Length: 185
Image 1 (tube, one colour):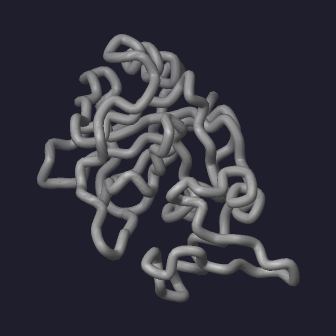
Image 2 (tube, one colour):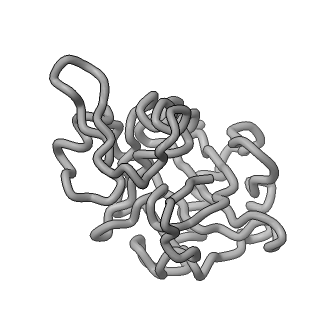
């Protein structure tokens, strides 16, 4: 059974996930999801409370995993390609305003980047969509991410529901204006 990783997206600035140029990626934040998600698996980000439980901000199927330095080289210029590999090892932060703390730096560079399939990814941002009742058991709640609790057939039902709403793609801007010091969830 294909896993479906779910979490609450506290801050939706268009950085994590990044929605530049129609491609959705997760290059910063959520190190446990980035470390564990495999190609073919799904990731869903939900609105935090006090919004009703089950509001989907985005959902996508992992198409590719890239090492942090390889991602920055391949996607140089994307807003989330903020860590350049140093020739002797380690990383250089390209945006001093983004995650300036050492703990944030460590988390961002500790796991691969997830790149999502443009044909199987929906980003609703400021216009989230409510899960249908038959999939409400997938709704994330609280801190951390969830993997358990998905049933056989949920992946197909999720993709069918998403496809019934709109074609894959970026359908609205992020819900939060870009802050001076971007944060993730």
